[in-house]
Amino acid sequence: MVTAEKLKEMQGYSPEFKHHLSVSKIYQACLKTGYKIAVSFSGGKDSTVLLDITARVWSKNRKDHGDIPLTVVYANTSNEFSGMEVFVRQYCAYIGQKHGIGIDLHVVRGEQTYYDVLRTEGYPVASKKTARKVREVRSWLQESGVQWDDIKGRLKDGIQSANMLRAMGAPDTIVLDLTGIKSDNKVSTYNKLALKWRPLITAPFKVSEKCCDILKKAPIKIIERELGLSPVIAEMASDSETRKQSYLKTGCNAFKGNHVKSKPMGFWLEQDVLWYIDRYKLPTAPMYGDLVRQADGTLKFSGEQRTGCKLCLFGCQFDPERLERLKGMEPQTIDFALRGLEQGGLGYREVVEYINENCKCKMKI
Image (tube, rainbow, N blue to C red; front, side):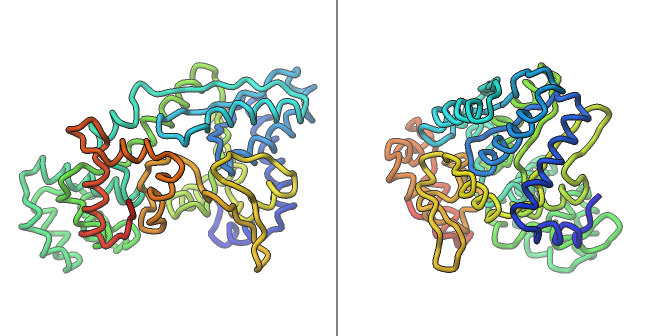
């Protein structure tokens, strides 16, 4: 367990000290597992730093692990920026040469493509938490036969609204999603589906957060089980409130028997990542562009600030020009995305137009 106060203190450490602390956390995970770890590498800036730090630990302790290669796992989700897998392979070769170690790269792919997941599960819109809540509510409405129009105007009365839903047979998760009232009748506004996104409940398309689990996490978990390795990931508490709450529960290393889930950069901030890239002159994926120091002294990429899945609409409310920028880089991808499902495309035009009109977003296409 890590307190919020302790996390804030750690986030205030100097980048150099954070680097050394992360080294110790990785070394701790190596000792606990007998060096049976696998670095989850997406090609993004955070995992670019993580792989360099882990390789440094691996190189310095080669006598302890018998000079075996460092395992790296890359999940090709079929929704990566063009050229990302090429960069991943080149960067792994660079890291191996830089630190004088072997790199055992596993490129994994799920049984489904992004296209498949959109059709079967739904679109990743707003955020993982919001998409999950929308999916849960829509599923409950369908299963229970309750009409959204019959209850949407009766959800403003706190416990009274919660009791109304309970009388309809709604489970605690749905009561929490729609009223912010927990099973003990305490209020949790953080877990309440925001009014802004409630039009998604009746959208003419499905919404889901499952794409990450199906396309990225599931195939990585399979390879980890097959190899008997513990994951090392570049997840940071500053990424989202959900990741912050997860970090507060486990800290950098979550132990379960001899298995460890290591998040050695959990207390880092984005500027720490950019500092490390600048300090150690690490190559980064081409879609980032150049790393530039701003007038206020902070660092920023001239291109994309994040990579990840290129057509993901999580965070669309904060980055309305995302698809427009992608059109400049990959016009064929955008043409395919905007084409209707019945024409063999991804149906994005309908999704973007709906969230712009009903959820007050300003996505450009």
